[in-house]
Amino acid sequence: MASTAPTVAASATDTYAYKIPFVIGASAIGTVIEWYDFYLYAVLATTVLAPIFFPGDPTAQILSSLATFGAGFAVRPFGAVVFGRIGDKTGRKVAFLLTVMIMGGATVLVGVLPGYAQIGILAPLILVTLRMLQGLALGGEYGGAAIYVAEHAPDNKRGAYTAWIQTTATVGLFVALGVILAVRTILGEAAFKDYGWRIPFLLSAVLVIGALYIRLRLQETPLFTRAKEQGKTSSSPTKDSLGNRANWKLILLALFGMTAGQAVVWYTGQFYALQFLQGPLGVKLVDAYTIMLVAIALATPFFIVFGALSDRIGRKPIILAGCLIAAISYLPIYMTMHAFANPQAGVDAAGKAIQVATNPNILGLTVLVFIQILFVTMVYGPIAAFLVEFFPARIRYTSLSVPYHLGNGEFGGWLPFIATAIVAATVPTGALAFLNPAGTAGGNIFAGLIYPIAIALMTVVIGGLYIRETRNIKIWDEVGGERPVPGAVTEATPG
Image 1 (tube, rainbow, N blue to C red):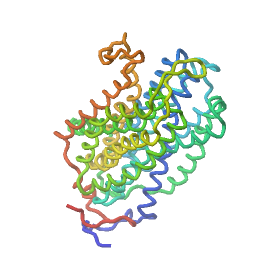
Image 2: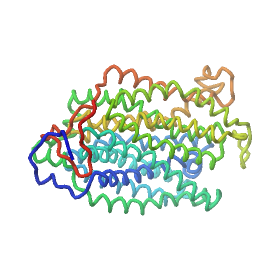
Image 3: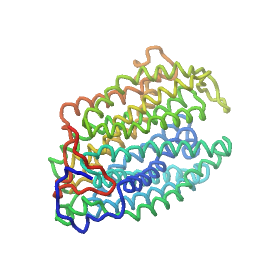
Image 4: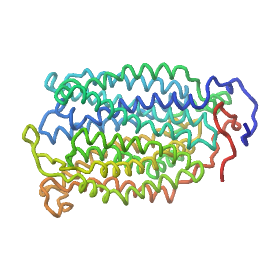
């Protein structure tokens, strides 16, 4: 087919055993499984795992479970450095073969880990260790998958092709919710909380074996292979990436001007929304999961829509618009969710005071969650293409992964904990009681939104002022020009 790409001499590495749909599919399936593994804990943390693995009163157990959730994110930047070095020096394929094995092994071990009642303090300590191993693996996975697709894709279709990788986190959450809901429905609530929660974790063993089989068939990316042949890779990618003051400027710009805002929008729309439904709003678990599943299913195609749109109008305007619209909309959205759920005071089976949704408007709640996930697709769909274009091939894996995982691991991963802590501090005797002028005993349930709104607005300002548009950067020019990969579309770049 016709192409405007420069003509370059063929090399041995320009022979491909598969087409671009296989590249995307093989990369995506492993990443979906890694997100599934990582988010199983997140979905079950406060409602099931907290009393099993942590001592103390219910509030302390929930905060401990959320802190453990955050611990997995805290080590993601370290995983980015470790596997980034492997990916930039040895190859993209090697790095993400290792990550899927580590993630799968840690997830299966969570599934067989005894609780606090059986082994005492060892239970939370081992759980935190396993979560950190998961975070380490995920720190290397995302960058590898995004770069693997990007370095097969033509320059003018990078947003559309890498957007498929951007669906994987949401699809992984969807699969986790679906598997948990199915097991819970089949076994019943009591059996699920007793032993059934382990089944989704153990299922990971089968999924990881399948992912490894597929990924072992992959070749190294043609762009990286040509760069290596031409002597354009780095022999010390960690030093060249993290020991370079100019590159640190790019890393920090990408963090504060893009990924921090993207991260809080992602975790507000897909985790805090679920936590808010089940906690302050008192929506039944099955209803809350159904709301999330339907909203995710309807919104997921928009990752591709906004990724493809970014090939035409740019990455920056879509991502920053998503951050701005989300920041403006969150408070009215969550206040309307409260009205639709109509929570009333009640007690659970153990006599603990809880909120119970009274005749909740399930359709209305689903629409409001869908809108939040639509914001997610705006900020997340184009972000992989932006990051790939922001850094050079020789240190791309390391440099890209650090701001992505600092943003999503620290700003995003700690969001549920920070938002919950802010609400807890607004009780009448708390440090932030001034945010609760009504003097509500449980605190101001909307106060937690201060955090994602502030971070999203920070990104809009910094990104708007200092981030350059990357859409027209041609990464293939680093290795002498573009040669089409079978199955890729390489018509002239629009605009």
